[in-house]
Image 1 (cartoon, rainbow, N blue to C red):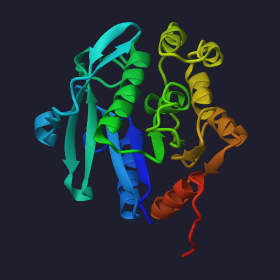
Image 2 (image 1 turned 180 degrees about the vertical axis):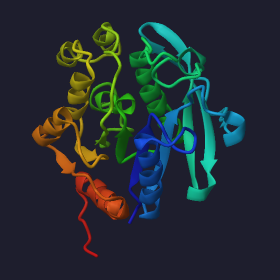
Image 3 (image 1 turned 90 degrees about the vertical axis):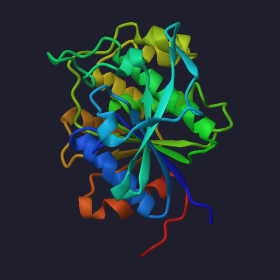
Length: 274
């Protein structure tokens, strides 16, 4: 039987960024999913704080060179790759000087959120999808870690829904107790409109608080997983109310099999008993 293909996208992955709930979890679950017999690809942004020499990042010329338009501004897409030798897997990096050269992730040195975080997320998601197409690799399921990566659900269900490369792709969002220092740019909904999103989505995106954005992401997902033993009250309500496949928090020693089986469930595959 052909291996199922799972695309992992995350705003942080260890060891390229310091250990955090998101970076550590993404590293573990992508590696374990591969070890459970699935084919994987892993993508993250090439934030400027990442040491390219230490981690031996190098540009993939054949995948770079595409220009993406975000809010009517054209930005060149650069693709880099590095290996996690201990896990026998590669990580692809979405890069662009306009969005990712700065030496911080989502907030500046004073803890203030970057005003263009919405555009950075849109570029990251679209860059990932266009690169996957260039690779000729068709994901059965995309697992998103962090709200920055969660934008993927909107694009799969709308902008790319007629693209034959993603016509059957399912999306699962992983819930973390994230914080956002301030809401996204008030023009976020206008930018989505320029990208071809329908009026209903554009209207909902006018509320750019983290809670509203998370709710919007979940409404476009096929499954939900939980990375924290206890969610905030607001996130727990979103989880409880979502009428989709759900996997509650799983202890680390059981993650590998539980997540792999859950991905199969979302894909409609029969789950084999041990």
